[in-house]
Image 1 (tube, rainbow over the protein chains, first blue to last red):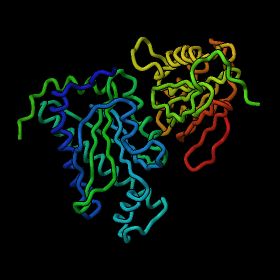
Image 2 (image 1 turned 90 degrees about the horizontal axis):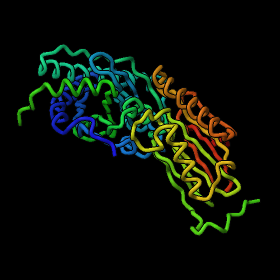
Image 3 (image 1 turned 180 degrees about the vertical axis):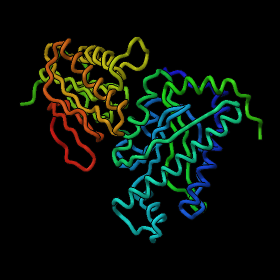
Image 4 (image 1 turned 135 degrees about the vertical axis):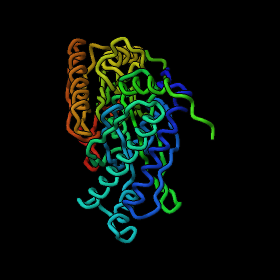
Length: 215
Length: 168
């Protein structure tokens, strides 16, 4: 049986930083989409390989994903996943077209999705890094890599995203979020997935932090 | 002609359609279908046509190096476990043939490419050491694969999203 990669106490210490990342992401993508779009943290969780590969729905489902690498103080992956209809709704919104105006992924729609990921991922990392730096009084630098767009089986995409963490014997650590547009839920999934080496560094950093004050 | 199932097996013939998840493996006898979805991982199929016993492992990494994960997760432990379970189901190592697929570099990164290549190389090396002939492979590229293994016929098909299933 796999061990926890981060103890409940360390997950609790990580949570405020993830929330700040989500808040900065919400602000940035709302400005980008010119609409009240919010990302909130569903959970900072740990699960088995099998559970993790179901995070984008049934494994055989065709899904789209915009993927960005994370470099610097913590390395890993960020992934924004959505089914065709949700992703194309986003493209319509950004391109100022009526809803359901697009039914296929063309260059313009893919570009709109990748730019959204670029903005969302960069803002999330900025918030995460700022919170961890403030609380640890240590410099934190998190840099995104350029996004890539993929459309494939949900399970195949997630296997590749979790491949590095799967090197360890521990449960997989990730942050799962949900999105709302004008208060209505969107079936997008944003995942933040630190890699195995970074988890060791993250563990040490979090151990040095005080527990967050209860709200 | 469909091979006869030996009478010595007291267990009923299995008729299942089962999915093999990441790092898992499964073995069936007499009938049924084993399926898996692959990205950078390798789906290894072993088949004893004479005794109609086959197994599928979803291999994540090339070498356990003493780690204690599920046996299907690593190429070395997956092959050993598959051989054990196939023998328990009435199959024989001397009858086995192998086919495998996967090892995609879906994100176009150096690290994933290395893992895919290492997985592929490890499976090839282990099968050679075990004296199990490899009938076909479908590895590399940048797309995910859905692999399906039909036990009665021994047919293995691989399908990429939007493509048609092709026989391996």
